[in-house]
Amino acid sequence: MAGLQLDRVRKVYGNGQVAVHGATFDIADGELMVLVGPSGCGKSTLLRMIAGLEEISDGTLRIGGRIVNDVAPKDRDIAMVFQSYALYPHMTVAENLAFGLKLRGMPRAEVQRRVADAAAMLGLGDMLGKRPREMSGGQRQRVARGRALGREPAVFLLAEPLSNLDAKLRHSTRTEIARLHQRLGATMVYVTHDQVEAMTLGQRIVVLDAGRIQQIDTPMALYERPANLFVAGFLGSPAMNVLEGELRAADGLRLVLDGQGEGPLPGADVPGSWLGRRVALGGRPEHLLPAGEGRQARVDGVEPVGSEAFLHLDFGGRALVSRLPPQSLPAPGTDLRLRADPAHLHFFDPADGTRLAA
Image (cartoon, rainbow, N blue to C red; front, side, top):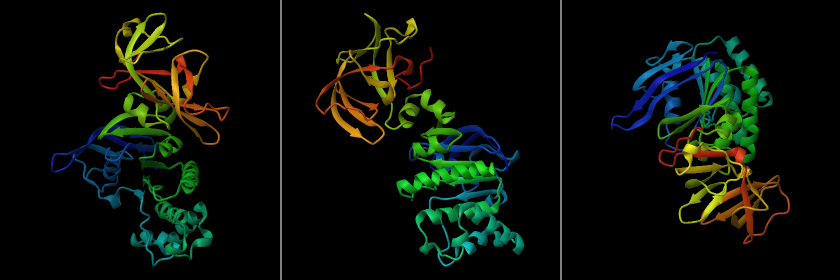
């Protein structure tokens, strides 16, 4: 296996469009790193540059300490699993697993060993004689992973491999990929637009937007301390609640909303220099709770999802969401008093979205 180092890697197309702005980060040997962001953020372009399928406009890419900017994809010691499985329909599973190895001129005995190892690892042993049309989407996805496994590469690159699967299969396949990573100790770079995949799979996550890295950290660090409003809103389902207003200290700390009253913030502690300034105040749905006193909100809708329920609220014309246990829930149209957990409030600069540090 091998680590990766990206140093100010950029991608600029001929029309001047900048797809990736100076990406700099390291991926440790054996780490599973997830690149996540909305469509068009540059994550797939970044993965294609690592694979050698897209030319690097500027900067340096190293795999295992070797600069590979001008190295052909076949010589980078990487293997890719794509969103489309790209299996040969006329070949059996065994033939699909072996095809790339044979093209490399590998001895027959070694090809058979690698095919058998990959099939055993992925539970494909009883499917080796089947063709792709005889298999489910999840089974075909396993064959695609097996083909990459057979290469025994230094780095695995996975480009939205679960997008074609239904919700149940995505969940089980995420678990399979996590177990496979633990078993192999392999270096993996995983691209997805799905924040649930990113949070459950990544040891660390690179969050991108508009070709720029917004934050790099562990899943829980990103969730609990987002660096800016974009990360706060992108990671977490439902998204973080955000209200904008001016902080004032009159009968306790308050957020004065624009022409819509104010929200008390009992127990919150902020530097004195923040008083009188505009802030964007964030709070996760699980930290917005019913209370005996506080500002009232109207319940617009109740969304029970089994182990929890989401209350969709109108707070002075602003939409908020509260996450609650599946207990006795208020009916739509009723009023509810709310309090925000002061230990889990997030303050951002509304002008540029950056997190305010105390």
